[in-house]
Amino acid sequence: MDIADASGGRFPSNPDQALACLTDIHTWYRSTGPIPDDEHTIDTLASDPSPLGPPVTNPGQIFAVGLNYADHSQETGLTVPDEPLIFTKFASSIAGPAHAIPLPTETCDWEVELVVVIGSPGRDIAAENAARHIAGFCVGQDISERKAQMAGSPAQFSLAKSHQAFTPIGPWITTLDELATPYDLAITASIDGETVQSARTSDMIFDIPTLISHLSKVCELRTGDLIFTGTPAGVGYSRNPARYLRPGNLLTSKIEGLGVLRNAVTVAQNSWSAVQCTS
Ligand code: ZN
Image (cartoon, rainbow, N blue to C red; front, top):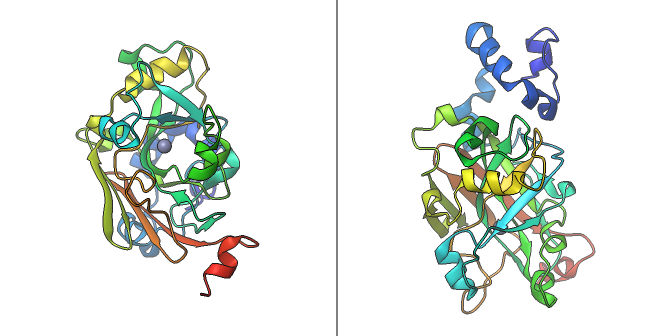
């Protein structure tokens, strides 16, 4: 629904701006909030999120954590880092929970991740206070073009992870009060129904409060900032033989209690696949 209309103009319709008044929106909705129409209930949107755009459209900062699950570190052959390994994804790569992902090359890979959405801003946030700065969680994919990501020495991640629609998030933001065990959720990715990643978010090496504390020692965390908290084992490039996304695949990313992303993998215009997909 348009929350500006529904609230008689009290709240902004831009979801990024609405995040700044989340507590007031909660209070308003629980007391006088309208009922969504039948077409757009949580149940219908869970099975078909296509009416939804990304729940944060233009985050100021997107932090991402590399090698934050031991089994994923192991499959890449890299040692577990002593402190969080941070890179960025650029905001123009944000996409919704059912947007198509056009492949720019033949070597694009999947990484399902829990995404933290920052609510109240802060610097030097102690780990024990981290939850106060979290608006909620959503599901994310850190789509990665592996050839460019691994080409340099040292490797550089950010551009290779920021092609168009390489950062689908959603289907919505779940506040922590909706979750019995917010730091221990089942996380899976599947391709055309075949499970390729399956883990629990409690397997993270650096947990979410530690990540928030670590990042906020350097950067002010601001409302709407996103933290991609790392992916578990099962990505394509560390398989033997390596496996990558193909045009026509349906990539499904799911986290217990947070919902599901259903992104169709398609062909980027003027790229390799415009030819290959007809063969
Ligand atoms: Zn990642």
